[in-house]
Length: 309
Ligand SMILES: Nc1ncnc2c1ncn2[C@@H]1O[C@H](COP(=O)(O)OP(=O)(O)OP(=O)(O)O)[C@@H](O)[C@H]1O
Image (tube, rainbow, N blue to C red):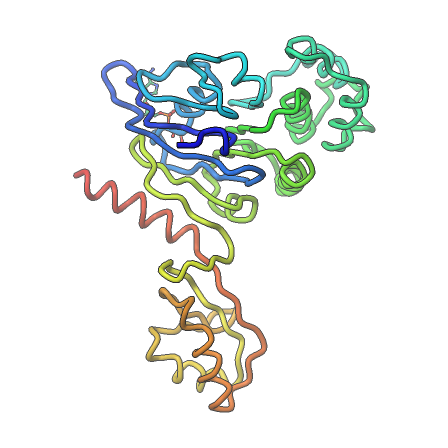
């Protein structure tokens, strides 16, 4: 595999904890500038995998490459490119935000310029509070300072374990905006673990789904143009009953508050579907399609669990 073209490559990683084989031949690669969700049921191995990527624990076998450098043989070089918040951000509460940043900057292999401090403070929008003590920060502000700390050294990969834990809806929305800004403005590749499928669906471009210590699928979020993929098409049409009857041959339709919904591997059928409706004097006001993460997630993780029993 051309490891240098992917900022992060996890290759056939295995980990035993006690007598349990927790991570089993785990492999995945992240493409640059993309935001990835890291999903899986409790105990499926997300935290263990993240701990291996950031080199808190060592794999028993397999490799992790960060910007082409192996965490086994070129640890320092590899870790230069990675930023992470695993569990809660580790901040000094009795220091100000700025003092925290300076404290962590001292641990960086490369010196951090004054411009870089200003840049990250602006990015996480903490200008107004950067000289206040962190103990006075809200949880959302602490989370943002944690992100500022973890990106000071310009990592190309940022890993966040359950970043929205305990945040209120506004905190979650703000965090989402900062993370998107990071991917867009700094080209950072993100791996975000979460149990909140709806959050992953709106934040991430892709999701890596794991179950029982191994990757079961990689999903592309939002619109997707793969004709073999299951999707839900939503149509706002008038008269809706006539539309439902005309679409019957494609599969069962369901009327929801969003419109008429029809599920299936339907991407290639969309042009014909539109023609059929308009040729039969049905007016179309809107048509959209979406791959439903929740459906995909449950079918992947439950199917696998079923196989195992
Ligand atoms: N020290 C340990 N000794 C033995 N087994 C362990 C140890 N630590 C974790 N495990 C097991 O490893 C598996 C993976 O745990 P891990 O914390 O990586 O899962 P997770 O996907 O992050 O779960 P959650 O979503 O609950 O945080 C679990 O079955 C857990 O019981």
